Image 1 (cartoon, rainbow, N blue to C red):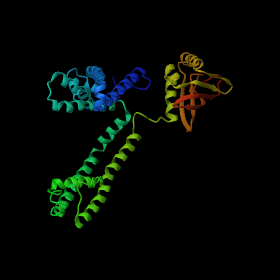
Image 2 (image 1 turned 180 degrees about the vertical axis):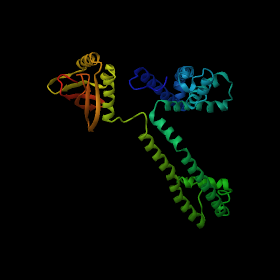
Image 3 (image 1 turned 30 degrees about the horizontal axis):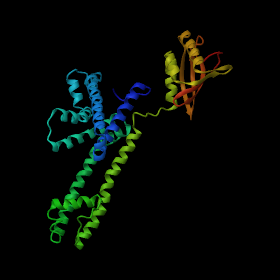
Image 4 (image 1 turned 90 degrees about the horizontal axis):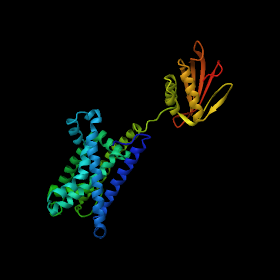
Length: 358
């Protein structure tokens, strides 16, 4: 029920289905506000809404039931209550709540539209599956203190300029600047550099202050843009979903698999056209032959191990120097060369003073 891991095709298919259903639901909510479409396709929209709610309800119930597999919610009752009150679970609940409110409650007609509008919360369900939405949420959480500071400064500036323009323009425009709260409309429109034109200063002093405030607004709204930009850069750089593994890290994992005599792990780190070779020996090429080779080597030589002392990498090549054990009475000096493709071993060559070693 959680986001698909690498290679989990069943979970990937489920994620794709849910994301597609969410997207279609949002489109349907928008289209049904068009009278002509609502009149022509009303029954179809209702059937689609019912089908979607059934799917989302089953998903919500299954998540609530299986949440105890997470150590954070391991207690049967309290764990499920904590999960139900979590942000993602509340979004899931709000996504289906409008349907059941209309079904079981006799809502006032004036509230029906507002309740149905809550279906747009289904859009937030995508945050579980779409990386860009998760990154946005992460950035807002990490930069919340900076954003709060900017909003506080903006409110202070808004109050000051609204008060100033009220006293400057009140006599000339008693209707437009009737009070400080009324002047705040002009202040916000000017600070955001929108400039609707419905309210504007007419006195010379008011126009002078208006120019200064408009220039101030450009700087004010550049602050949150800079904060969010730096947050996105940090989030992308630290994104745990796309770790960058160096060639040396890949080789280290390969060596660990060899030394633990885990044939499956060794094979999983090799490409389909993996080439295994060394001095004075015909290369072994292909997944089947390579598997047979490692099966024979690691299962018949219990002491076989690659003991690395030095490792140097350049581009897609990694050179290892150390000792090779398990091929003679004592470990012997050896060197290995690995070629990396897409974080996998495409070629592995050994150089040692014993024939037929790997």
